[in-house]
Length: 197
Image (cartoon, rainbow, N blue to C red):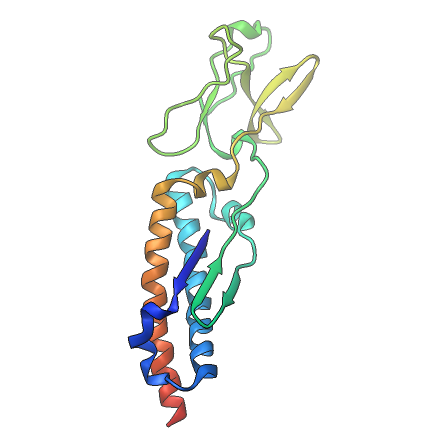
């Protein structure tokens, strides 16, 4: 997620530091640093709110934030990138083993997953209305699996950036980032003025 700010919009805030280009740059960079930390926190919170992912899984997908400033603009970037996650990172439906011994697989209960609160349960269908997936327990954990020939494979699907692209997530993060930047910039200007006296 990119936050681009035209520093000319904050001329009134930066006016007390007029003529001190070095101090202005330091104030803008410090405000951007606080803002990008706020962006990362809000990205994690918003994705967690719209999905069943854990905070640690989301944080692993966040890259090291980048900051860049020019005389007229400031720019902060927080990248969200991950590999497709196994479907058992989300909520499995039903939340019990569906693969039963001594029962034909066509008679197993239908297995699916739900990616977030309020989202529908999705079933990986084989085109005939039967679910291709089944829930099994390995080492005490539930996994969503499917059979490929004679081999069993774990099912993978959505990545973390899928949730970061939601309008609800990105709009909230950008709105909060702009507010945080302005507040932080006022604080930094005040701090630098006190230091100079």
